[in-house]
Image (cartoon, rainbow, N blue to C red; front, side):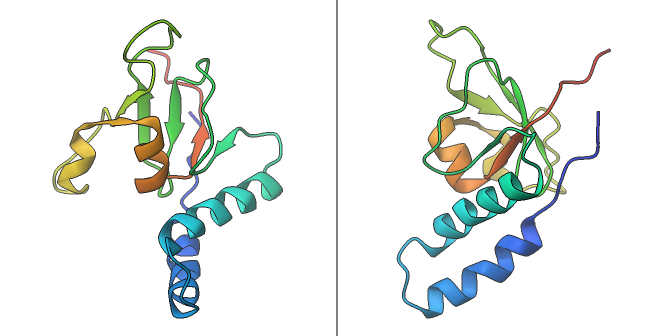
Length: 122
């Protein structure tokens, strides 16, 4: 798998000026802005930010700081089609909340933007 992109620093630099300007939801807006930057810098990629839908054929994504998340089901009829989990969660490296299962909108708001990646072949 190709090295995943880490835009946590970019997001962290965008958030304080937005907060200082009194922008409500500054952290979410900064995530949307990072998604726009990713789309501009890598137009051949599939990048999704808060408010976007992730197509069901996308089953693995990397988040803002490069961690991998997997969709629980790619079947559009499945009740788990919008559920994501971080398979390599390490409590020593990740916040505890990342150990759970997240719905697509929460994944994008809390950990996005995300970029589609090809899953590892074993």
